Amino acid sequence: MCEGNQKMLDVSSQEKSPYILVVDDDDDDVFLIRNALKRIGWGAGAKIQCGRVDNGVDAVSLLSRKDAGVDLPAAVILDINMPKLDGIGVLRALRHAPGLRELPIFVLTTTANETAHVTAMDLGATRIFVKPNTMTELTRIVREILDAVDALASTHAAPRAPGASSRSPGASPRSPEASQIANF
Image (cartoon, rainbow, N blue to C red; front, side, top):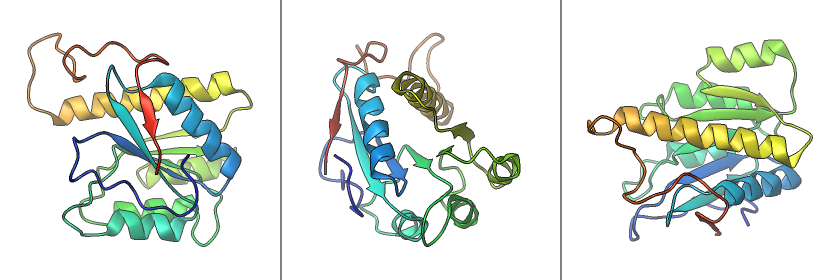
């Protein structure tokens, strides 16, 4: 499970796997997000690596590291209400950091405050979601996030033949059986 202030998985010595960094101080929410990722999967045979930090300061520090062997996550799922530095502060810091301006950052928060949502979008959030009350709805939101990441990766990848997918060769659409979550 993605617990504590653990570093992102160093995949430099392994086959590259996409990973998502969850920045949230609520253990229950992280558990549910992780389970939604596990239900959906990334594609046949692929794994989603899941990293987690529980405050904004650690998130900015982790993502700002300049180590050549540390890859950026495919996306960040960011809460707004956190200790040390809130999600708005994280967005502000990351969008001013070279190399992090294009990182997909999806805000998933209990905050229903329209002003906070507008501020997050103005600071470069990829999309804002209000945390739902059901696992079905959370799974739908996580599916939207993964589909958006897939679409963004497709626009930054080499040109493909018409109708070609950005998924691995032979990959099927996302399904609960398609993938696993790697824990660290």
